[in-house]
Image (spheres, rainbow, N blue to C red):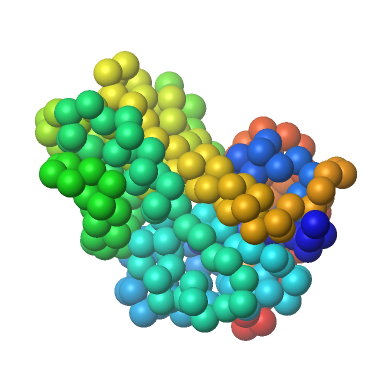
Length: 270
C-alpha cells in the first residue's frame, strides 16, 4: 500500500483526459495534475525546449511527493520521455507504448494512421514502437497544429463548422492512405473524438492515447504494489497561467465538476 498521489502533467488541459481515465480505473487514488497553460502548446517547440519543460514539470510534481508520473502529453512522450525517465527515483510513463500496442492489435490491414502535434509527428517514437509490436506495419502521419488551440478554446462540438473544416483538411491524407486504425497522438484529441470519428468513418478504429496510457499506469502500480488500497481519491490541479475559467474547462475534460480548486504556479517557480 502506498498513499502517495499519482502525478500527471501535460502542456495544457488535454492531460485531464488521462486524469479522467485514471479516476475511472483507480477511484481510490489521489492525483496531482499540472497543466503548463502558460506555455501551451508545446508542439511547435524545439526538442531541447520540450525536454527542459518536462524536467520542470517533473520537479514540480516531485515536490508533492508523487509515487509515479504519467506524462499525459504526446509531444513530451515522443520527444523527452527517454531523456528523463531514468533520472528520477519513481516510475515515469508516457502515452506511446500503450497506444502503439493497442493500434498494432486493432489493425487488420497493417495500415495505421497517426495524428499529433508537429513535434510528435516529427519524432519517430510511435513508428518505432508500432513496428516493434507489428513488423511490417505502415504508418501514415499528419500534424494537426490547430487541434490543440481549438480544444483549449472549447470548440469541440462536432457540428462546429470551423472544427469540421479543420478536421477534414487534416485527415484527408490519412483517409487517402486507406488506414483502418488511427492513433490520436495527443491527449487533447479525445475532446474532438466524435468529429474525428465522423470524418474517418465507421471502418476505422480510433485509439485514445489517454485511456491506453492510464490503463498502462494502473497495471504498473498494481504490479509494483503501489496502489493506495481503497478509499476516496482526491484531485489537486496546478496551472502555469491564470486559473480563470479553469473549472469550466476542466469539467469539459473530466465530465464532472471540480470546483475552483486550481492553483496558479509561476513559470519562474518551475
